[in-house]
Length: 92
View (cartoon, rainbow, N blue to C red):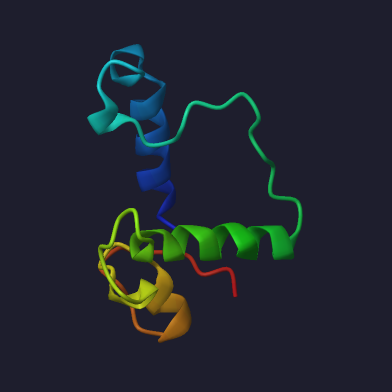
C-alpha cells in the first residue's frame, strides 16, 4: 500500500510522539520492533505490499473478502487500475 508523502510523514510524526507510544494503542501505527527492515529489492517490496494489501482479508480482521474491496487499500489501484480513496504513487 502506498500513501502520499505528507500522509506518511504525519503518521511517523504521530507514532514517534511519546504520548502515543505504548499508552494508547489507538494511535500506534506500527508494532514495537527493534529490527526494522530496509526495502532493498523489488521482490521484497512486492512481498510487503501484498502482505499489507491482504491484511484486511485475514481471519483476524475480516474487513473484506478481497484486498481491492477494502476502501483504504492501494490494491484497487494496482489490481484494477482504479484509483482508491487515498492518493498513492504507484511503483509499477
